[in-house]
Structure formats: structure tokens, C-alpha cells
Amino acid sequence: MKQEFMLEALRLSREAAQNGEVPVGAVVTIGDKIIGRGRNTREKDKNALCHAEIQAIDQACKRLGGWRLWECDIYVTLEPCPMCAGAIINARFGNVYFGAYDTKNGACGSVTNLFTKNFSYTPSFQGGIMQEECSLVLKEFFESLRKRKETKNTSLKETANMEKIASFTVDHTKLLRGMYISRIDGDVVTYDIRTRKPNVEEVMENGAIHTLEHLFATFVRNSKFKDNIIYFGPMGCRTGFYFLTTGMTHGEALALTQDALGFIESFEGDVPGVSAVECGNYRDHDLEGAKKEAAAQKEILKNWTTADMIY
Image 1 (tube, rainbow, N blue to C red):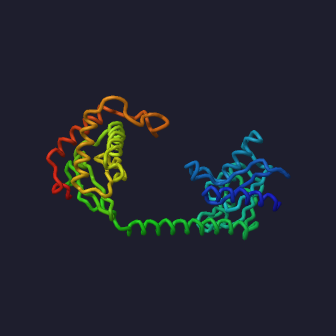
Image 2: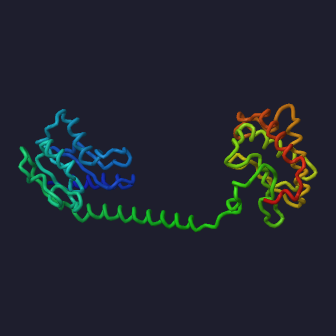
Image 3: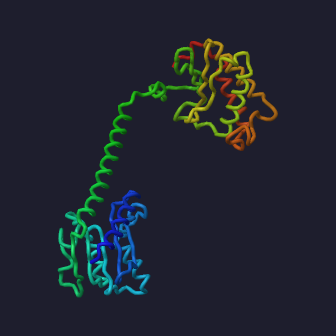
């Protein structure tokens, strides 16, 4: 038994830990040479067979060109499980050296001992080699794993206890097409320009949304209220737009919206801001779709009043 080989297995186990795997490393030796290395990669490879011992044995067999490893020894940082102990027996290893004992799955003395069963061949074995060092790597890994889980659970609890934002308190099953006052934050008013009945009607197409956004924003930012415009953009649910203003009455915002929709409905020519330099997705535009959306929403708002703007 040579300690340097167990040190190499330990190095491999630390590599496994760094990759989020249970830290187990193994090496296969013949004489003074390492001919196979392996570390646990079950999570990465999504494969129950990817234990350190199996990988090291596979490398050694390929290196030697045969499955009988009777001149070889194997060093592993954790007591082999039944699968790996079986592979060790079948490979005809001369000696098995392992570090930490595995009281839950160990098949070399802890839970059972396959190496003392009446098989046609069994290797010599010795456990507890550099046991403290091997056990420490495992202990640190599982402590770190528990802390990450605790942090995740804490974050989930904090999220569950977060106060709902205002828009989530609106009953979307009762919303109809129109224009509504979504919220007021000091001098800033957020309007909900709702173009679809949520969860009932088909949502808007992305190209039409995109073009309508370009044209609406261009129109209002060139109007006499250009200094009162904060933002105009689509909702993630694709059932409407948010329009943010400051220093305007609700009536002025409604009238400006109606004018912007009329502008889009009758627009001809090149849509402003549609180039690779000016737009993050300039290929995804649909002028005809935007004009249809604008015409439909303009009709909805034709007789709309500020009294209708309350949810």
C-alpha cells in the first residue's frame, strides 16, 4: 500500500466536490504506476453507473486491453458500494484499499462484506487508509450541501412572505378591453391599456406588439406632452401595454392614447427605429398587425371616459 496513491484519489474526490458531486475518487495501480483514474460523476452524467471505482476500472481495462486486473490494486476514498465491490471482484483485483467507512452503503464490512463471501474469487482488502482526511472531504461537502439547501429554503419562505405587487391584486377574470388606471406613485401614473380579455382571448402576436410599441412611443414623445412621458411598453402576458406619465390629467392621457392609436391605424411608410443599429430585434415587426391592433383598440376607447378608467 502506498499513501501517494490514496492522495491522488483524494485529489480526484475534491474535483468531484467542486463539480457538485459526492466526493469520491479512485485510482487503479499496477506496480508503481497509476493506470486508471475515476471520480464520481453521477449528477453530471445522470447515470447511476458513474461511480469513481467503475470509471477507474474502465480506464485500466482499456489501458491493459483486458478485463482481468489480477496484478492491479485499487485505491478509493470511500468504502465501495455493492455495485463497485462486485465490479472489483469480477475484475480480479489483488488488493483493495479504501479510506472512509460507509455505514449506509458499504459492502466491505460496514453493511455487508462481499469480499468474505464464498465467491470464486475475492481480493485482499484494507479499510481506514487516511480515514480522517477522506472523511473530512465528505463531511465538508455535505455540510456545504445542507447550508445551500437551508439558504434556498429561507429564500423560498421569504418569497412566499413577500407582499403581492399591486397588479397581482387585480382580478384578471373580470378585466375587459379598455384603458385603466393601474397605479399612482406620487406624480407618476401607470395606465393599463388592455387589448385582450385575459386568459380568454388569444394574445397579441409579437411582431404586431413590437411595431405598435415603436409607433406609439414615437408619437407620444413627439407630442406636446413629450416631457410628460415616462414609458410605454407591452405587458409580458401580451394582453396589453403599460403607459406611464407624469404631470398629465387622466383625460389628457386618454386623449393622447386615442390620438396615438389613430396615428398607428393610418400609418404608412417605414416604421421608425427598425434597423440593427436602433433595435434589439429589428426583424420581428408587423406593421399590418399593429394597424389592426390599433384600430380595434381605438374603437374600444372611442366613447371611453375617465369614469371608465377605474378597475
